[in-house]
Image (cartoon, rainbow over all chains, first blue to last red; front, side, top):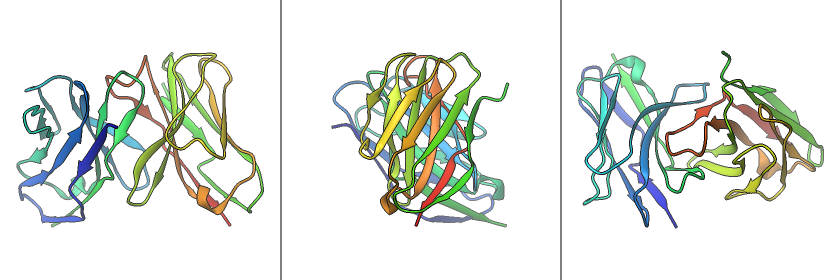
Length: 111
Length: 113
């Protein structure tokens, strides 16, 4: 079945460092891909999405490109802030039924 | 516009007790979902309702029942709680399916002793 694999965390960075969180997927068709963020004690918020190959989703300085050839959707940010500390989830959706999530990657940014 | 609301925020149950988690959305969405989040497991789908009057099982439905009361409300019931059901429960909604992502509620943290 469809699945999402994320790099294991936690990821610990200093403020202004470059961030990459790897995400790869397995799917039979052409899924939509998402990154969600969960701040401490809160629910999930949609961070960005891409619906077809080579699409780039971007929001709040984060970006990810849908790479069909490598089945990847890596999350990047050029300069992280302390306020970016959160858990990040990669997810896919196919056939419009439900989101399939990765296990999540915890990011901790220190000043 | 409150979005997706869930009650209660926290709950402690004893093994064998029952309870209902409530979820409501005010965005006129057709589809609603219940997920559970466990450490190191990501989010797993329990049940979903593609539209009013329909419900379907997700990945981990055992031990749960759901009711789509109307277009706004989708409740999750634990008939006889077990320690394995200790988790954080999230409700989500979307206009139709999750091809565009979805809106999540703040979650209910449930502990079963």
